[in-house]
Amino acid sequence: MNRFNISKRTTGSRKQRGQGMTEYIIIVALIAIAAIGVYSAFGRTVQAQVSAVANGLAGQGGQANAQIQQAAQRAQRATQDANTTLGLNNYTANDQAQ
Image 1: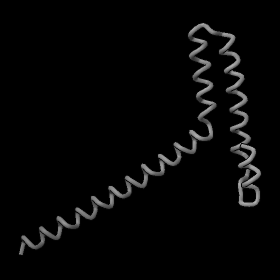
Image 2: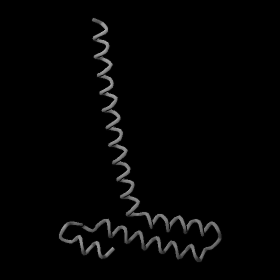
Image 3: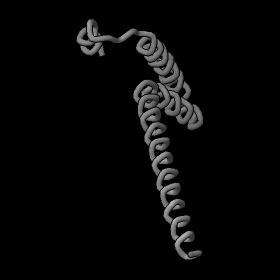
Image 4: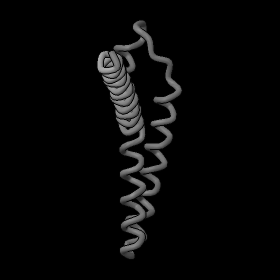
């Protein structure tokens, strides 16, 4: 009779492990979706800022200043895009603007 009770406990723990793994996969998927969204919104801005820093460290100050201004413009554009309300009524207008 003890063997029967032990086998029931084993199958219950397998279900719990599977549930934990499913929750983990869902959390990882949500983090990946959020990272893709952040990168699509601010990717070019971050790229321009890193490029400006690299050129500044390399001693190319004039080019670095131009890239810093470009990064500021892209950051402003990203802020405008983030504040734009999207819906089905204005989707095509916003899609063409980008």
